[in-house]
Image 1 (spheres, rainbow, N blue to C red):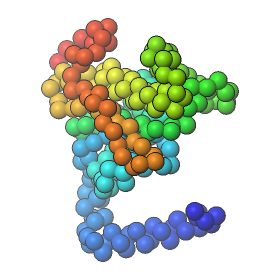
Image 2: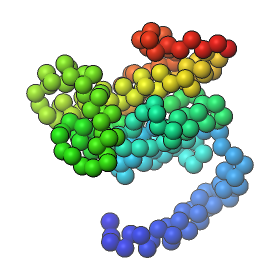
Image 3: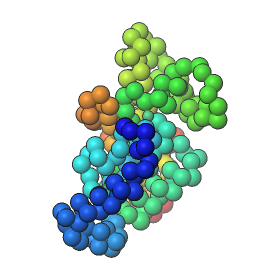
Amino acid sequence: MNKDFYKNLLDNNKKWVLDSLNTDPNFFKKLANGQQPPVLWIGCADSRVPANEIIGAQPGEVFVHRNIANMVVHTDMNMLSVLDYAVNVLKVKHVIVCGHYGCGGVAAAMGNQHIGLIDNWIRHIKDVYRFHNDELDTIKDEKERFDRFVELNVMEQVLDLAKTSIVQSAWKKNQELSIHGWVYGIDSGIIKDLGANFSCDKDLSEVYQLDIKQ
Ligand code: CO
């Protein structure tokens, strides 16, 4: 990457517009009519995990929320607003939590370094470590433990999505909505489906099942 990368950004944009119009003269006209993406993507802010590109999706196909370590924090108004709009207005059929191996946020959560304000965000990931202490502490190889922690963190965020009133209300209304947990390999480009898929609240601990009247 050259050091004047910034200077090229607007030129790159012009080239992209021309390329897009070459492929489809109505490309932008169609997008201007509105969006109906079938998927909400909750991913890590990491620059190496661009949502659309790695799943071959076009503009208009994926509604995206990204933060450090793809967290679903139930007091995060930003995440909740994105989720609410995606589920109740856009009526997405799938929510994908996509983590990635080598995640800096997850690595920070395994250590004890004090970084700054971000410590408070990382704390949520440390809680996931504590939930799975027994399994993680038996893994002696640090890389293996790191990889497993990344996977467990994604699965925990999938559960946290299922616990939200937004998702549970949709399920109560029999709205078609599945939640999936994936992990992306930065060194391979391959996505692993963790199989942590939910389409109803029956697998949630009873204490989280909200009594939502229709
Ligand atoms: Co990350």
